[in-house]
Image (cartoon, rainbow, N blue to C red; front, side):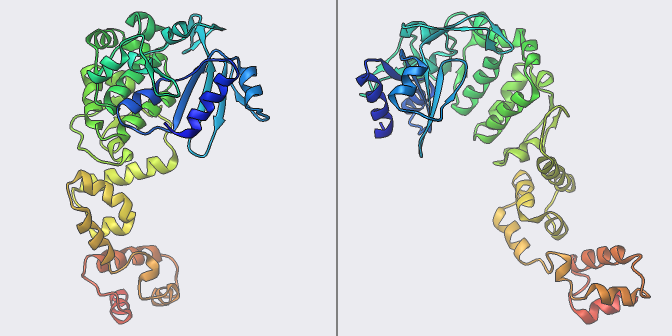
Amino acid sequence: MDKTIVNLLKKIEKNGYKAYIVGGFVRDKLLGIESSDVDICTNALPKDIIKIFKLDKVTKDNYGCVNIKTKKYNIDITTFRKESEYENHIPKSTEYVMDLKTDLKRRDFTCNSLIMDYNEYIIDYYNGVKDINDKIIKCIGSVKNKLTEDPLRILRAIRLSIVYDFEIDDEIKKFIFDNRKLIDSISFYRKKEELDKIFSCSNKLKGLKLIKELNLCTTFGLEYDKVIYCKDVLGIYAQIKFSEKYSLTKSEKDIITKVRDILNSGTISNISLYKYGLYINSIAGEILNIDYLKISKMYKTLPIKSRKDIKISLESIVKLNDNCYNGVNEIYSKLESSILSGKLKNKNRDIVKFIRK
């Protein structure tokens, strides 16, 4: 374990408290995955942590969590607690406790319930190690209670299943299928966060299949049939219909529209490379099963990459157009398409003749 984390845990313990790494960092360590997010649970109160580390500027929430950032890690230190009923995905109130097992009981899935001390000794109250080895997502306690009190856990179960290639326990699957309307209470902003994580991983097609299997397309505001694997997240969005309620940026929408335009044409051409550039064409090319090196070579050998490359000045075009600016854009468009298609050489003499005709 990294010395930064070891020293932090030791420092808390030297001050008379218990401290353990909990959750995702431990899960990822068992799976051989490096993580920069570290959650620490402790019986020290937030004010104790602030005092121990002599923190001046503290990021602290209302749930007993103090955040410390280092060059390598984002560390959240949280006091053992138990929670009341949930409302809008958050507990109405929390209560600090001194019992570790009580704190772990409130967590979502067994794979996230493991704790580890600075000697890397793992404490496992809920068979988390077995479930990680078996590659299965199981709830801690009642499936109904866990997923009803916070429906975000439904999305988290799906995402964990996809990212880590785990199966979801049959009881959880059945509950999600029968109670999918619970997801309606989740904002499209949060839904997109989870979809982005799913579409970013190598197992993304399994994710789309699972969403259909659980009958969640309508709930997610998605519609799709065959989706072809693509590394780029926006390449996946370009292949599906999604609700306008998803808050994509103007840039994201623009890229999706351009990729769809190329996909509709069914090929990569000099025209598409000229209009949209190498990046967007490479996304479409992967979906169309066109080799990137071929696309890159096509782009490098384009006779023009912008209007500035055309061997005639704007002033000359206006002069040839009876000193009129009207129709200049149309002339430029014809020049672009003719040069890119190979019908016209990008030479001033040939261009002048072409305009005169």
